[in-house]
Amino acid sequence: MTIDQAYAICRAIAKQQAKNFYYSFRVLPRHKSDAMCAVYAFMRRADDISDDETMPVAQRRQVMTQWLSAWREARRTGLSDDPTFLALNDTQRRFAIPDQLLEDLVRGTTMDLEERLADVTPVTDAATGQTLQIYEDFDGLYRYCYLVASVVGLVCIRIFGYTDPNAELLAEKTGVAFQLTNILRDVSEDAERGRIYLPLTDLLSSQLTVDQLLQTVRKQTPPETAKKVLVLEANRALEFYRAAQQLLPLIDRDSRAALWVLVTIYRGLLERIIAEDYDVFHQRVSVPTAKKLAIMGQGMAMALRNRITS
Image 1 (cartoon, rainbow, N blue to C red):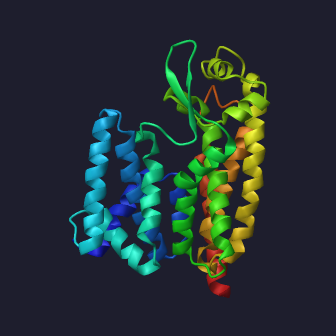
Image 2 (cartoon, rainbow, N blue to C red):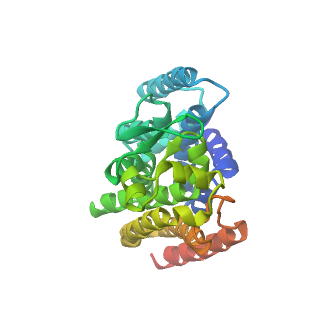
């Protein structure tokens, strides 16, 4: 298999599954877009193994261990039949992406397979007796956001290109903004899977118990019951989005449009959650496809201007 064929397979995976990310890939120069698709395909495979509920957790851990061993061998030898590994090897070589960032990326996507997460407190659902896991405080949640989102940002800026070292902390904070947005959108879905990412200290400061939150998830109480804690997290996310605006001019000109598209879509999702008065319980809030396409069109125009003036 050639490198071009490997990248084509990764691009097909990204086009089918990347959703918000793929819109930003489209406005990058081809070699950077290919690299982003390779990273996404790698991350997608880790996610798929972690989330495959047709297998018990112990089996998923075993499959993940085998898959990681195959990737590490591909890195060591430069040889593989896996198109994602081939494309990712080439991407790492071109953009000097260290193995440790990708190891952290996998660690983040597979945290749900760990028997006991750091910074997490087990709580019992009074209605079902199920044990759920909740982060004790925002510091613990930040560390989670770093692994599942900020690391992705640190990989992305190596592909986008930058020279100012301040870009790294700003990319970290931008990743936290994105993940907080995801957490707000997915409160119900996560709770049904036994995870509460709204920190316990934030619930308590908002005069909300875990059981009251779960009642809202089950639509036994109105969305307003949980609004105060959701507002708290949304305000945090808005503060972290400021880092994205500071990051934008530090990125190479040919990649700024891609970052702008991604930030605009994700911040737009947060703004829709706010516009829906934080009712993330009755339907999944999303940015309409037509709006995403309009944002991508603006991004393409921005990318063209940047190339002409660079």
